[in-house]
Length: 88
Image 1 (tube, rainbow, N blue to C red):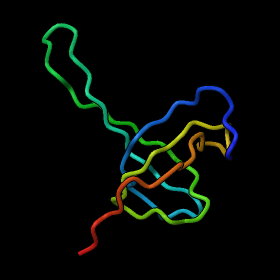
Image 2 (cartoon, rainbow, N blue to C red):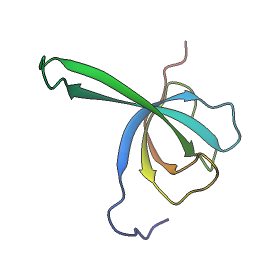
Image 3 (spheres, one colour):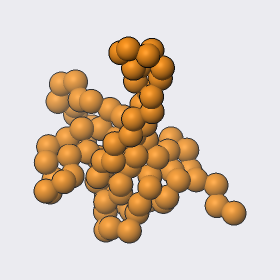
């Protein structure tokens, strides 16, 4: 994991599910400008990411990096937890 292979895409998102073993679902939000109305629209995509240590919980802000296919849906890996979720 220390050696990088070229330029890999990275995304920042929020964990929305941690119910699977060693897998988290991360919601990545982005703003897109509408071509005609010039208004910013929120777009979101859910990515399944590999979490080797099962350290992520719902609400964590994480940095994910693109990787080889790990399963049918998993193509991302959690690189680091940027912010831990505040638990009440």
